[in-house]
Amino acid sequence: MATQESGQQQPGTDRGRRAVLGAAVLGAGTAAIGLPGVARADARHGHGRGGGGYKSLPKPTVVAHRGASGYRPEHTLGAYQLALDMGAHVIEQDVVPTKDGHLVCRHENDITGTTDVAAHPEFASRKTTKSVDGASLTGWFTEDFTLAELKTLRAKERIPGTRRHNTLYDGRWEVPTLEEVFRWAEKEGRKRGKEIWLHIETKHPTYFRKLGLGLEEPLAKLLRRYGRHKKNSPNFLQSFEPSSIQRLAKLVSAPRVVLLSGAASRPWDFVEAGDPRTVADLVTPKGLRWMAGYAQGIGPTLDLVIPRKSDGTLGTPTTLVRDAHAAGLILHPYTMRNENTFLPVNFRKGTDPSAYGDAFGAFKAYFETGIDGIFSDNCDTALLAAADFVND
Image (cartoon, rainbow, N blue to C red; front, side, top):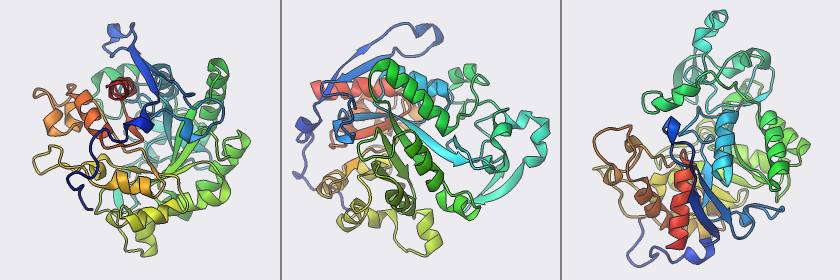
């Protein structure tokens, strides 16, 4: 992918259209358990309120990646609730199916690392090895459990070595269904007097369709049941497989986003269909126009926006933001995290990989490219960084 030429898109030139995020203030009351303060940010133009569609969201939009996963085990109602309380503009759910066709919120169908399934002797025989999108995985998988069986499990922290504090909440929450999340969002929306925005991803859709557990149709059915299927509905639908988004475009009118991994990678549906295109092809002006034919946005990895150099520091921004906007697409890249191990080298502090680095500096660098929003495990930090950027 071509890099940005000098003088083409200077930092801050797109700031006017983004300047709708109000000030964020730091709350109190969380220091006792070692968490940062709660940041809140309210848009001056609606915070997604009143059916205005995705264009009414504050910019930069802060998407809580798997909920407030920097502070609670991911994809739990606890993580979603904390993200909402912190003021996140949109909250993400990844969906996978159970054996009996229910959609549940897990980042992967392999639940070995995110639940206590290994501690359940009654499920010991379910441990198996599978090939999922070309990767060999050994563990326990949602498609081998009924919803009733899955509900006997409890969620736990996925990366306990990095996020030791989160293990305090191991076992506290069960695996939620997407329908439970919709009900939770309805309840919170009534209480707060505003729409609760969600960002819903279909995981491994080609793999599941081959198992007779297609994701798009049951997702569309749920969206219609809860009135979240319309053009201005408060949710994005997203997938790393363009064909899943194309299928959803025929079923519902809700806004859709194509997720993009590394430039050299190929979406798994492309691999299955023999389509030779890579992500590098999709982020060209031609590829972006193709995606704009059925999607409203893209969710690129941050390295497609600003590549890292060989030493791990940030390099020169590419033209992706400019080119995507020219095609009429918004950009919500992923994922910002506060810990050193995830940050570009030039924003790390000290030698402890689990310690927080200069996340604010990294956020500023990404915001300056003109992105419309960002996924973050630490939505309070992201909200403060967005407020700093807008008010700078």
